Amino acid sequence: MEALTAPLVECGTATMTLPGQAESGDRHLVAKLPGGVLVGVVDGLGHGEEAAVASEVAVRTLQRYAREPLLALLRRCHEELMGTRGVVMSLATIGIPKGMVSWLGIGNVEGLLLRAGAARRGADASLLLRRGVVGVRLPAVAVSVAPLAPGDTLIFATDGIRTAFAQEIGRLDPPQAIADDILARHGKGTDDALVLVARYVGGEP
Image 1 (cartoon, rainbow, N blue to C red):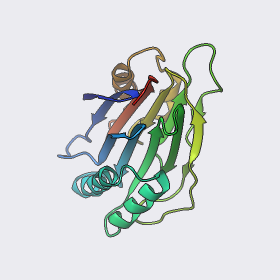
Image 2: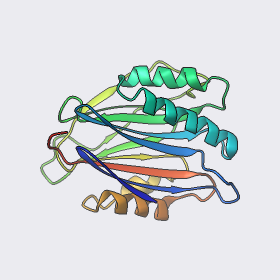
Image 3: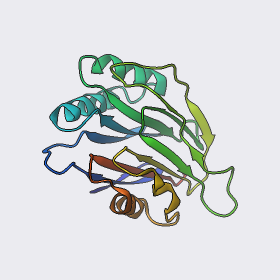
């Protein structure tokens, strides 16, 4: 398990490889951008080596083209992943423009935005996921945009995590503690699993 930091956000990740497999097909990315941060979670279809290969191709593509808009990034990944098992993924840019999050999801990597404090700007939000497989069948997709306040927390979780995780989150806990707790409480143990938690702290990039 690894704690990550990037400008504008505090991040934590927790991951588990399916028992009996040498590699996980679940990968993540946190990349600094001019004015913000790109975060993403990728889940290669199935598990094992072929799933890991597909997810690694996706992460390398995201790293290479990180400065492009989200829809362009998605198309890049789709082209690079043709001929592989394909992946599902959720992506977000935080702080571009300032005080905003833009996000999209293909497949079943859940996304949740938790609002901080009692005086929240808007309610908690869930990422609208489109059915499809990046590299195999890419559906029509749009980017959703929402305002951010310091302390708002974005969570991505692969399908190795039970969906009930959203009901038991300590909103004030550090991002790494949240990620560790979600994995410990809600990891299925029958698939690779990965949780990424990114808290917007505001300030200048």
